[in-house]
Amino acid sequence: MVNVASRVRPGIDRIDPYQPGLTDDELKHRFGLTRVIKLNANENALGPSPLALEAIRRELETLHHYPDGSSELLREAIAAFHGVSKDMVLVGNGSDDLIKLVSETFLDPGDEVVVPKPSFSQYGFGAAIMRATVVPAPLRPDFSYDVEAVLERVGPRTKLVYLCTPNNPTGTILTRRELDWLLERLPQDVLVVLDLAYNDYSEHPERVVEDERLLADGRIIALHTFSKLYGLAGLRVGYGLAHSDVWSFVNRVREPFNVNRVAQRAAVAALADEEHRRRSRAHAAASRAFYARALADLGVSAPPTEANFVLAKTGDAKGTVAALMARGVMVRAGFGLPEHVRITFGTEEENAACIEAIAAFLGRR
Ligand SMILES: Cc1ncc(COP(=O)(O)O)c(C=O)c1O
Image (cartoon, rainbow, N blue to C red):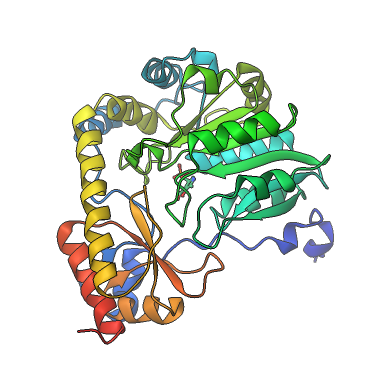
């Protein structure tokens, strides 16, 4: 028998496999529930874009054919949507895929990657598989961005800086002014991965807007996903906007058919679905207002969120998750924050049930 462990690349044994939130099926099975309220993965409570669903149905007849390996039509649609050239667009099997591809393209063992703390776990994963070192840049105690702390951590070995806005799991934003401040001071050879997975939900006047000036900065890699606002998490499709030089290298490590046919067609249709986008934004705005009021009424603090989720300080993350699970409400803990849970916005009824369950857990009702 081969000693497998001795053949594995150094560092692989130290990677913890990604722990996704429990699926609704698992929860139903574990607690004998018939219905669960799934507020643990920042999905879209309104479901997929209806135009995307139509496109998916049409595309099913052609599944015996490989996808277009370079996702031409989808990249064209994304380029037109953002007013950029097609060679500035790369699509991935979710933005997770793009994070991994960027890591594989740029990181060597010992390189440093500056990552906000707390933030999305996949940045650390990309660094770990390449044996790069994560240098955490803590957010301020109120979870706002501290760009000086980010800059202080940039050194001669820094290859990438991740900035997630609105940030997962805090919902707080990096303002365009803060981003500009940072870009003025960051070395020219440090790439900045700007993860905008939730930016479309934000209507904040100071949010990052990807204008021509920003995208002309060759250091910027702006990541987007169809998993959130467009409600297509199960299909796996995301994209990045960056200088074509960046993608010309990333493309070399990309799998030839990394985005499937159905996902490509659905994403094109979803991009054209302005009504679904508008409803999803309006729903998030209404949910933000609901949770701000309801959590404040319970004496639970939460940083101001611009996303489709809120980080609530219930005092005992594990206890909250367990108590809510027993009532069929799934929220997420972890993130190195023992007193906070992250609640994805559900339907009105689901949000009310979640608040009810938190109130019961806190003994406030
Ligand atoms: C900040 C952030 N970036 C990227 C992703 C990955 O999204 P995708 O489904 O496109 O892989 C997520 C998913 O939760 C996220 O929260």
